[in-house]
Length: 181
Image (cartoon, rainbow, N blue to C red):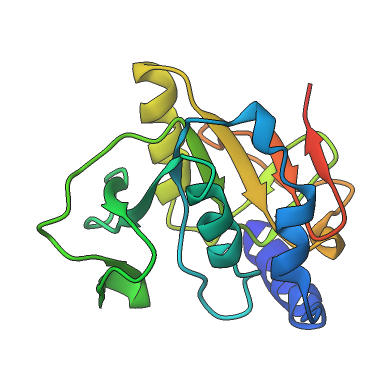
């Protein structure tokens, strides 16, 4: 069921390459809610909406930035400090991450990539479980706001979910920001 949902979501997203969408994320991001946060972002892969312009704008408001380091399968992500123009290296599965000498920090705002999301905050990821494990760990250790980042057209009425799937707290798109109840 999830496999077919992922294929469908990838197909839908492939049609959503919207010029200027990354800049529109900045316009809809509620800076005041997250001032002073440690923001865990990501470098886009494939056809994901690009959060890097948003992250640069967030950094200018005094937030600290971090990017994930992809561990072996079955483990949660860790986050290394990141600043605009830092040298990035290739990680597992084609990810891009900070060099190993950068300090490990813990985000309290996590920008989460996804294939699809629902009006209730359910998220469909790529199937590796990295963000579900990471969110479970961060939530067990403290306070974190999980904000999906996607094109508005990635919203679907429902998704197949399991007990380990972690919900989003909010979603940011090129058209809106929404907090889930």
